[in-house]
Length: 494
Image (cartoon, rainbow, N blue to C red; front, side, top):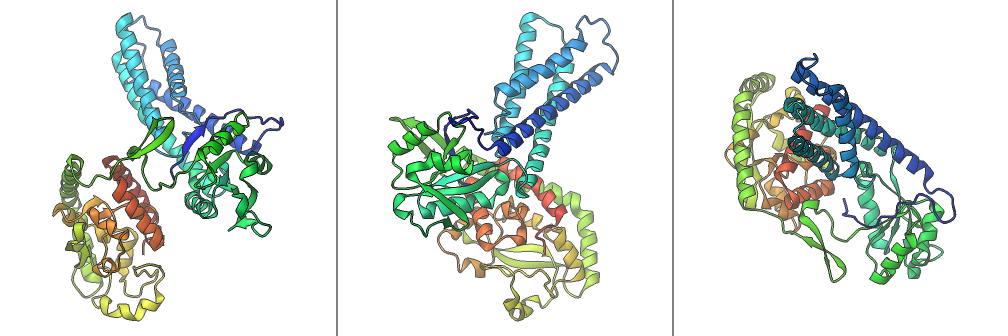
């Protein structure tokens, strides 16, 4: 998603005219945040009870003068205050991105550290076992509860019923359309475009819409246009007419109106850890770190890949034997299918898979080309007649890809990475797409957890390039976790 930098922290909920702005969205927003407070309080109450039961077995601690009946609710209250202090209930934080989880963890760790220091200084004899278990269970519980709440919010946003920001996009025509496309690509992020303002020179009687986005004004009356359509966010994208002076004045005009101002720079698909904003001569310069394709983190990633693949192969051996027997009994031909793919640096290797098609599948491909159901360079067909009965089941649950653990063990693939392309696809790559070959291909990746075969060629390439530029060990763990859900749902597997 396009990066956005918050410029004006305007939080007043009533504009100068006196009428509340975006009342429905604000009500849904407050309702969601209140539900988070109730959810967090419930989780922390359970965590404290678990800590007490684990330490004292449910009975009153013998010989202790500490009134745990008062300590327990005080701990819950202090925890909630710590969450509030680190802005864990800020509407700019909740619902999207990793910052919400980071703040929850930091609030929990700071509370634990503060209690430990205060207890040592005051020589209070509160059980360390009780505090340790409560803090550990509470932090994990908070993270899990926030994850569940976010998924529910994302589902409601995708259906158009959840709390979302009403956005007025401001900029040149081309940049407005690009930003609208980016925001709509991920509706769960919660940015609903309700109008656009374009330069005066482009504002003509015929220019009433950009696509299906209504043009509601020019740069001369941005606050008035936002007020007219009930927008609570003004998103400014690139335009030659929006100078630094005009942008600063726009921020002043929006002060006290309850409308947030965000700036969407032309820089896209760059993850937060690579971006650093530094004030230089009064300018908020965005520094972008180069992608990391070698170094210590790459060595750690390779070690983790090979270690996990070795353990996984050993544990999955009985399953592999059963699948091999099923493939052999179902149709004529070898159990394993080895296909040439292109890996890191353009080097070709043989990827291992359980055979899911008839033996002459390649010869039949020419007859089916006209029935291709995807765009781009790949061939995908939902009801491919070449797929065997067992093969259809293996593809649905991605079990046909288990032998690729051997490719990971050999160092030809990674557990997480771009989809391994065919040589025929690579031969038609342009300069941008070829960047997929800067890292090892993966058994799973962003393409796998985002829809697999249901993705368009453009979206698949975009996700692969995003991973190449922004990979991290933490992101790999997240993708591996999401892969289990994607496999169980079976969406896009054919």
